[in-house]
Length: 206
Image 1 (cartoon, rainbow, N blue to C red):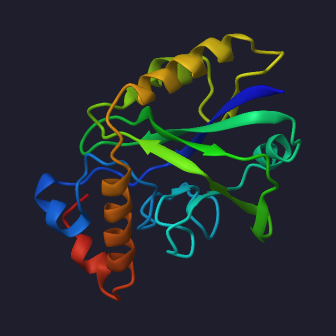
Image 2: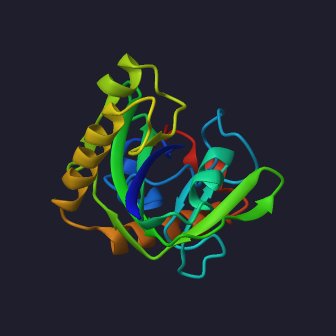
């Protein structure tokens, strides 16, 4: 049995004007694209960590469209699995970055297909840091053309992934866990999205 760490990408909610913080919450906490502002999103559901739960039930859910993740998890061959989250994030008026912001620990479990081609798994614990403590890995991701890639620590074709991923995981573990603040911001954004005029309220923020 071994420990497996996989690094997965997701589209994050883009940065907005600082004076929109009262509306959208603390922007130092990088969440998935809850408001559906990224035109590159793949399907009906936001890809990424649902720290407040997919059904807003407090579970640590991860929704994804990568069949590869499903195949990795269902092997039931690991005594510990970490899912390390890489946010594809565009800060306000800056270039897009690839930043590692947190991780889930998960049991050996099979993902639940919630829609055709869309899966969800639930973590047993989570650790997420704010933007100032996150790790910018844009140079590696862009330099090696890994923008859409899932990286795993036991890759035979790319053994260099193991050192990279483990160092990223160690970096996150060394910083303060802001999980509860992340949950609260996610809940705030879900409540905003439920308002019929939320897009009108966002005008001028982007």
